[in-house]
Amino acid sequence: MAAQRRAHLLSDHARYREVSRVLVIVLLLNLLVALAKLAYGFYSGAVSILSDGFHSLTDSASNITGLVGVRVAARPPDDSHPYGHRKFETLASVAIFVFLAVVLVQVVRTALDHLTGGATSRVTTTAFVVMLVTLAINLFVVWYESRAARRLSSELLMSDSAHTMSDVYTSLAVFAALIGVRLGFPILDPLAALLVAVFIGHAGYRIAKETSKALADHAVLNEAEIRRVVEAVPETSGCHEIRTRGTADHIFLDFHLWFPAETRLDEAHRLSHVVKDKLMDTFPTLKDVVIHIEPDDEHPDG
Image (tube, rainbow, N blue to C red; front, side):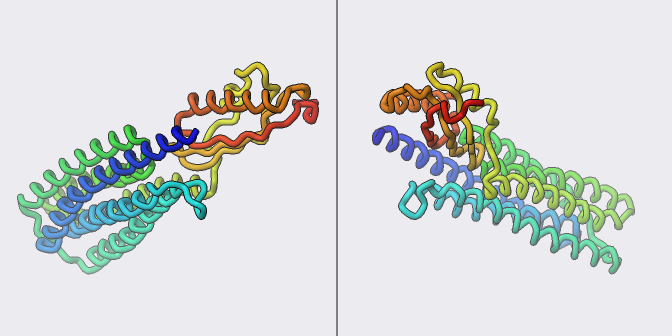
């Protein structure tokens, strides 16, 4: 058991190291995208590009937050955190949501100022070049990060890639608005900035929905599927009080397992490990299973 425990810790350590490496690469690319949009946005006065730059800047901020969260989450369990530090990764996702909320307010305020103030922006060929290049980088980041998220089963990378995907949609909207401005419809510039705000709000909602489940200990696995695995061990009589919590890639399970009243304690203990092993094999993201043994004569209706 001690050897298996050390193996799990080493596996987690390697996983977090790989997640950190992915985040560093994505951070550098997101900074490049954000700086390019912000520089041209301030230069030209194009509020849609400027707003999109702020949106991209939150990608970089969330990457930094994620790196901090992963560093803490990689620590092994200790006396103060017997279940490990994994929820710090979830808290990092919450921080991404906070950054999105701050940017949402800034984007809406800037867009409304341009709508009421009547300010105009200069849209040149450079604007289209900037948007096309940054769009290509964003598409690469989404592909690279979502692929790494599936490979590493990382909630944080998946949340961050969803955030970056919202950048792709907003960039397409901004690109279309710039064409409209070039054709003589300057109002499309601040309207596109408001559309950016919609995408930002949607991304924030998705992140808040997923992270709130983990923080509120929302049930992760289906009880019927757990019962099916338990009942595959014929010596057991059933189970109840099934509880799961955690994130999809880091789940804790506990339940009460029934045995015939005449079953010896040592045999019940051995069989409970058989059940645990089957559960761990069936659900690879289970990190721990706690089983409370009970005689089935206490549950005549079970």
